[in-house]
Structures are given as C-alpha cells and as structure tokens.
Amino acid sequence: MAASTAPTTPAARGPGVPRHVAIVMDGNGRWARRRFMPRVFGHKFGMETVVRVIDDCARRGIEYLTVYAFSSENWKRPDEEVSGLMNLVLVGVSKYLTRLAKDGVRIKVMGDRSAVSEKVRQAWNEAEELTKNNPGLTLTVAFNYGGRWDIVQACKRALAEGVLAEELSEEVLSRHMALAHAPDPDLFIRTGGEVRVSNFLLWQLAYSEMYFTECLWPDFDAAELDKAIAAYSGRERRFGAVLDKAADKAPA
Ligand code: FPP
Image (cartoon, protein in one colour):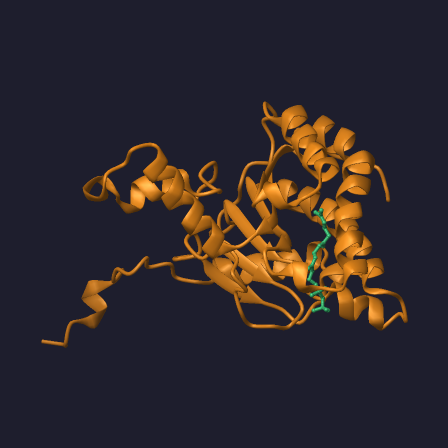
C-alpha cells in the first residue's frame, strides 16, 4: 500500500459534497470468489479499500465516514470467516493505526463490544484512545452493530439515566444513539448490487440520500466515490417539506 501523500484532515468541503457518508461495504466474498480465493481474502482487500477511501473522503472535504464492518447478524457466517474478520481488526490496527493517527483521523467504534474478544476490544480501545483529540475526518467503524440493537441500547441508557416517558423525545434518544458524535449521514452508499439497508443505522438514515452500486467493495475507488457524490449533489433534499410552493400553484 502506497504511503499517504496528504494529511487526512478534511479539506474545505465543496458545494454538493456530503458532510457525512455511511457505507455498507458489500461484495468482498464475490470479489474473492471470482479470484478462486477464500472469502477472507476479499475482506483483507476490503480493508485496504477502507484505508484508501478515508483519504479520498478527506480530500473531498467529507468530515464523517461511517462503515459497516461487522453486523450483529454476521456471527451466523462460517467460523473461519468470523475469526478472519476478528483477526483483520488486529492486523488493521497494528498496520494502519499509527498512520491514520498521524494523518489526523479520529476513530470511533460503535456496536456491542461485550461479545467480542478481549484482544479485539483492546485494539478498538487503543484506536479510540490514540486518536480521540484528532481534528481530522471522523471514521466510525460499526462492529457487532445493528440498527435495532442501537435503538434498544439508546432507550436502555436513557431509562438508566432516569429519563421519564414524558421527557423522551427524538432529540433525547438521538443523544443516546451510538452515532451521537456525528450528524445524521447525508449520503448512504451500498456497494455489491444489493438494494437494502441490512439493519444499518435505522434511526439515523431517516433523511439520507441512498446510492446503490454494482461495484464490489474491494474495487471501490475515488472515481466510484465521485460518481456517488455526483448523484447526491443532483438530488433535491426536502426533509419532508415542499421547497418550491409556487411551482405547485395552478396558473391564474
Ligand atoms: C460484506 O461483504 C462485507 C463484510 C461483512 C465485512 C466488511 C469488512 C471489511 C471491508 C473489512 C474492514 C474491516 C475493518 C475492521 C474496518 P460480503 O462478504 O457479504 O460479500 P458478498 O456479498 O460478495 O458475499
């Protein structure tokens, strides 16, 4: 992997560039199969892609990047694949953490950490601790994460804090969600050709623009990111309102 040529601190965000991009990185398994390789080989290349995309996002002024690395449902995969993905966390942290930290990336991890091994927990803690004051792009890794889990854990935390039923609001719940450190995603990208959300950020995607591509995640590059941004910048975001009321009036 080539050394970084620019700091990963976000550049000024141009017009039409989303502030927060969330990605379902699908297609690693098929990418590997096409090369007659085990699925974990695809995930390994998928991780290299994440590192490249962090840099591509920062260069375009994207401030928040959230990636779905391991879902609450991924435990159902073959043992070899699950342990391969867990091992990738350890490899990824030891291989890339120093560089990402130097580039100014702030790393956050969201998901149920109680079910992962002590080693993986420590690796995530180390990544968060080392980068917590960094001023650059915020990378959030969803790991053992599910959108339904997130809503339930937010309710539990609010209740544990003593929030009363009549005090519960969207704003209160948002503050307890795992992604409370970031604004809601502007752009959701799913690679790999499937057209579904798969229990990712169910609460936070309420008004995100959705972009689906056939491109398999290990092949996702700067040109693919630019296609997604171009599609996003052509959308009219209404957030449930009507923007041009005059256009709907019948002619006099
Ligand atoms: C979905 O593709 C991908 C995953 C379940 C894992 C994503 C993980 C990475 C890209 C590695 C990055 C890791 C870290 C720790 C940041 P799939 O396996 O379902 O592909 P398929 O649909 O072709 O079978």
